[in-house]
Length: 307
Image (cartoon, rainbow, N blue to C red; front, top):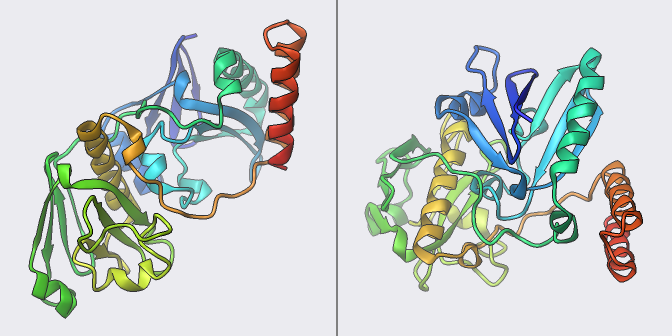
């Protein structure tokens, strides 16, 4: 490959084994894209992708959408489906007149996804395949300042915002080795927060549902392992890359993503057009003799269950 497709706020360069995504840093570019653009290009290996779709967009546009595999990108894992479409880094918005070119690259990219990727598309990646932003990182939350140097996460409480429970516990200085993951709730949603999930039973350890318990949002204000977001505090473009960097560091200490929990958030149902396209691709592999009858039947049934 090696060719370039330029869309709104981003450029995708297609290489033989990956897609390089470069984000613009203009005044109209979403702040998350600006933040990612400041960090340089994002290399997304084909192995990190689950599927690719092309669909009509708004106001005379088309959208090329690459869907990452579960566990392949720490940024996507931390976001856990909470990002609005306008700030999804895997969506490339193009003028409608470029639909033919976009369709060509969508087909090329689908072809580049291996047979094994289609057959194992529901399996989480063994490790992160897309790099997270590099520390040091920091941001200002409503009740404190969060800092990460690559080895330790520091929460330094603000006198005007932190609860008495957090003041009593004192500033938090937590080694990555003591963590099993993080839970990020978007500040675009009600009661946003970033919680550290510890390995032991200390405050901040996950509850029975794997995401801090059913009252997770209510407890964040009093949890010394969490910082909370308010209007203008902990914005997505600062707190989400921070969460992704911590997740990548945690995986580095464990050697496996199995110890990095995914927040238990609702996952939207698959787009029927995406499922139909996957079935078509599976059928082509079956006709070519690359997929057995048993594999074809089993995988088709899995895809149909997603409708």
